[in-house]
Structures are given as structure tokens and as C-alpha cells.
Length: 128
Image 1 (cartoon, rainbow, N blue to C red):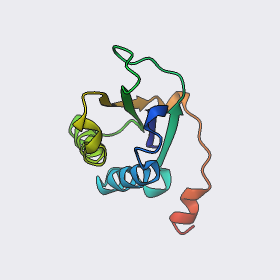
Image 2 (image 1 turned 90 degrees about the horizontal axis):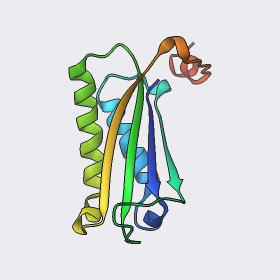
Image 3 (image 1 turned 90 degrees about the vertical axis):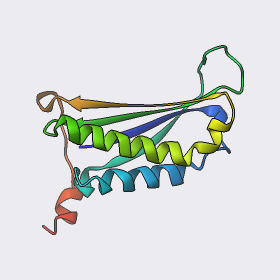
Image 4 (image 1 turned 60 degrees about the vertical axis):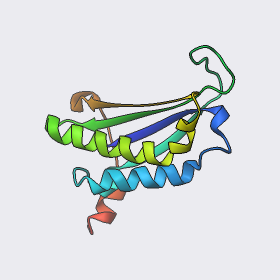
């Protein structure tokens, strides 16, 4: 149940190819070998209202929130986080050429007792 949410400031519209970012991050998550293909979701959500640092209008952000189920070691989570952050950093590198961009990533574990799911994609991808 890995869900990667990309929250970004609206002033990045036209400056970031969000489809390419989503696709690259999905591929990176799968390349870790820690997650089943039918479970991975990557989505981008635009923040229309925000205030960043000293409130300069050119200030921008991308915040990555990676929610995963329990069952992976600290090393596995760290490896996944480093891979995701490296991919995002690489694709967003031009934004770091100015002093107005911030990138962050946090991994959160989901409590299985408080999480409900129904997935018709798994059986199809598992060949059942």
C-alpha cells in the first residue's frame, strides 16, 4: 500500500512536468523491489494557497509524503527514501538553481488496524 503524494506550490505550474515526475517516481518505487506493482499510487496535488518563508512570490515547494504499510526494516525504508529523494532531486534540479525552492520527503507507516482497502487491480496483475 505505498502511496506517494506530491504536494506542490501552484507557482510551479509550467515549470515542472508533473506527469514525468509521477512516472519517474512510480518507477523508482518499483525498482526498490520492496512494493508490489498493483499497490503503488503516485499522485500530485497542487496547493493553491500557501505562504513560504519570507513570502517572496517566487518561493516554491514540493513536499513528498510516502505512506507505506508496516513490515519493512529501517534500512529498507531508508533505501526507498534515498532512491525517491534522489529521483525527485534530479528531475527538479533546475529549480535549485535559484534560492527559492524547497524539496522535502517524509515516510509514514500506516497502522493496518486503522486502514481499510479494496483493490481490484491486484488480482488482475497477479493473474487471478
